[in-house]
Length: 190
Image (cartoon, rainbow, N blue to C red; front, side, top):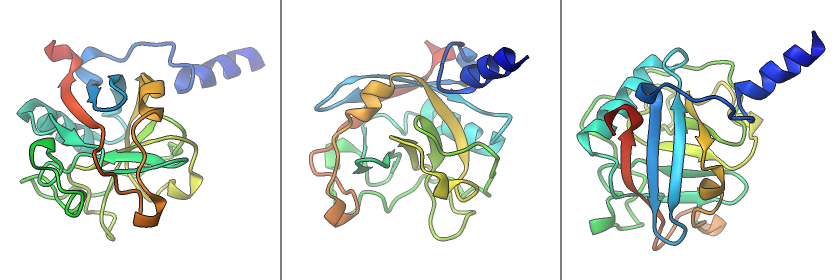
């Protein structure tokens, strides 16, 4: 019985031994200094409103060519500023201050821990201000638990995530000449 519990725990996250449904798989082609492919399982049962928003922005093409504007070693890589994060007009000064044309989302907190590979929604001071920006964890960070909405987890390509160009801690992780999401799509749309 103990073996079954351990096996189930490994399948739950870190083992990544299963395949998410194509409709709930976010594909990110990372461009820049360390190109590669990242596959994220979306969790509609955990955060249905956030997953719906991520899919909408992805299918709109809003996430294509968007910078990883805030990347902190030992913490996370943040992206998704669809207003100020486009690489064709990237300005590190404004990156991270924008959002989509859609309204902010109410928090959908869960009991999923912020561990390496977990994907959460960035937000402002209020828990109900998530919009388009999100972050991918480089390592476990329990102080974020029940403070931010988890909507996905990396199932392939964590090594690509780990190599995303880091910013300066002195300026809160801001990155100049950043890596970026070259192309983003839902696997079912291939």
